[in-house]
Length: 141
Image 1 (cartoon, rainbow, N blue to C red):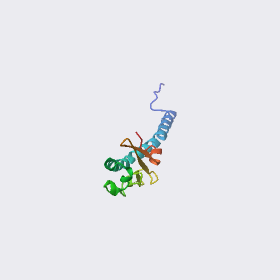
Image 2 (cartoon, rainbow, N blue to C red; image 1 turned 90 degrees about the vertical axis):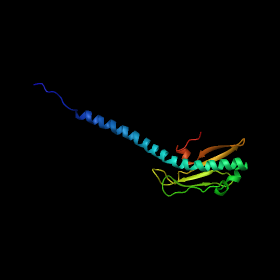
Image 3 (spheres, helix red, strand yellow; image 1 turned 30 degrees about the horizontal axis):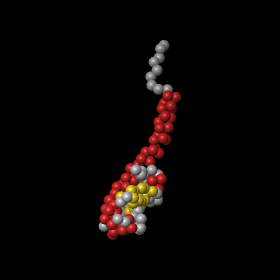
């Protein structure tokens, strides 16, 4: 009698399961990293208005030391208990902007970000530093 095989053998099914397991082991950490970077964009977006205010203050006064507080740049610093951003502040004398994130989508309070201005030829250039840059949440241009 001739019998026709229908379906898959056990070994074929095991190979498919093993391949799916390997792909999941590679994809899951990459996805988690992507989620953290995406959540950190909320922090970076909040720094944008402060960065603009410091830039306007610098163009008006000509010195970063004149733009080293929220009062001097004429704005209220953002702070929230929900979402990615916890607080932002401007450091004295250097006018660097420091952002502290909330515990949110894998971010921790230790993932702070410093946006440091450097004055050259009457213009400001900005550079990120701190754990946010080390972990790849932000990139310097």
